Length: 64
Image (tube, rainbow, N blue to C red; front, side, top):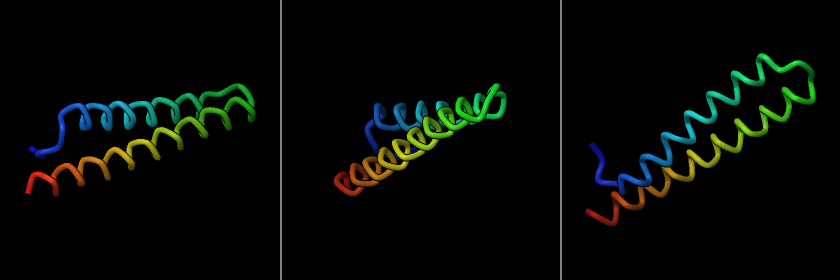
């Protein structure tokens, strides 16, 4: 288990779950505009998950 703040890990997991959900919504969207909106949300969630991973890495380095 990592030494990163548990809250950081929880937030990262939440964003990963949100990305997955938004991609599923995009696949079942009724029109292209709705699909595009869900894809943008999925990309934002992925970006936030990446930033949280960077934060977790910094926390681990700080603990070392």
